[in-house]
Length: 449
Image (cartoon, rainbow, N blue to C red; front, side, top):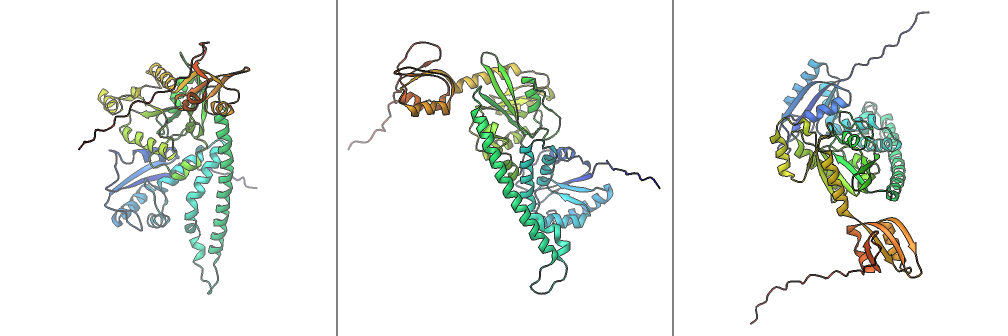
């Protein structure tokens, strides 16, 4: 009997990158640099690039007729397997481009979803990615079954393609429903876990993908988390203890990085994963100061934070990778726009002491460590203190309940109004509650006839 040998082809797919730049779309010096990083992260070998500047997108093929032919010749010359667009394409445009080029076509959203699917490790992140993929795929199911629906049918009869399409749609819609329900449970569970974690204030790292958040976390906490020089190296939240001199222990969280035009379905799906960020006391926005597009990347992060409805949270901007900046003028250009930013190098640990001090000061501004005396019958205030602050201890007396609590400054209004007394923790003396005096209101002068 002849022996059979199975040969596996580990050769990466060869990809051609393409982008249409419209008049209202800002483009960096190298318009395909970020897409090149995404394609490499996805495991493809980039063998060609094509860019077109045009007043508007062609309805059927996105690119103009001449550029489509140029793209076909480039695919043929480089023997590319896939064409990756740095734009979002319609199902019809993808179908027409695949027919014209003879290669598989992906748009930016599908590429990012593929990268997230490959990098998802935890149950939570796998659910989130599957939901985002299904929501992207559902309106595109039709093109997958066109070869079956072309069969001639009698009047009133449905072809097997139509039947299969309807079955696939129903299955996809049911799976989307199930995933949303399961993610809702995960999100509620995560929200309760984060909210119940009262042991220390929480600080969350946010920033553009590959800005060095994981490297910074390792430098601050010796966490040993994966820190690779590639896009979306981290998809799951990691939380570690971080000791601040003159402050104590805080919890530092690192989670998924953001990117320009991050698919909305991914932002929605990853809300539970980003719960640490949503409930953090302070955000550290890490930006790659050595990247020529740093301003656009900072803006993209703020846009995603706005989508998550957490853009108003207290934030420190951290300019990372200053060791990779060739010209001091480049760093000064960023500092001129963001004078309160903190320049650091997570790799060489330069500037980390300044960052630690700034975090301690920011947390100190936000929280007060107080002894609050409450009337035993004032259950509403006691419940409020427990909900809004971190209860350190409670002592019940006949006429007073003494509560030591760490409270956010912004939440002190009801306590000042209802407490018997408020004083700095550990002072051991009673101090009356001071009722704030409203400043006089200037009344505009009126003409007297």
